[in-house]
Image 1: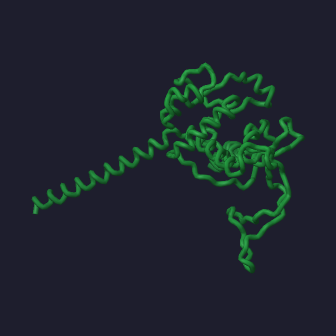
Image 2: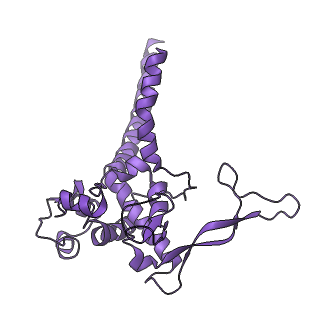
Image 3: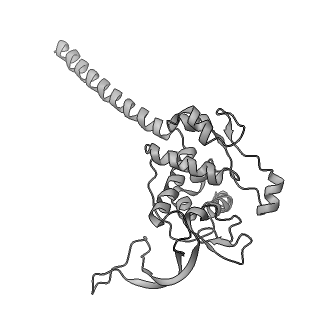
Length: 261
């Protein structure tokens, strides 16, 4: 039995290593919302414009997104399907895997289930963690995924982000700020891994880009579980039905025992 447990742990270890992305960086927490259709619509637009050229979503169809996100079919075809594909087709691209391997070292992964694999917090933090690194082939690196083999495709909107030194809040093991017991103020530490965007180099300010990164992550989370919102709605209906039937059976029970006594 001990040998079986050890073998199982050895088999699962690489899976957890991949999911963690090889980094112990503190991730920024977000709460994805499959009911926020405006966010999902913006996220899909970002995905199509900045990600789909390299990263397919072969387990998702344009038509499914259009239906779930309430995007009219004509608008979907005019603004979100940039190839000769039809609305009922899968969200794939024309990139040749062998060429992609030559360019990036490995074919870009399909992103349909990326949030299921790594988690929404990881994806959101990753999108916001590129920084200039002249030693890398594409001139950028990533705090969450060191030695990443892709360019910062969102640099146009985010701007040029660099590492810099400065004072940052000191965090405890749970990710909460450490408070100085004497002053009551958050404690700070010297941090030379702070990420600072060069002013005026992007089309969005920090708040706008954070929202864009959230919207894109929210859409990726939706693609990972496109049935989630429908499941929640169905679950509420089932609970209401069970409550109704419970009342019916309760009154039947009382009526039955009244006749007996």
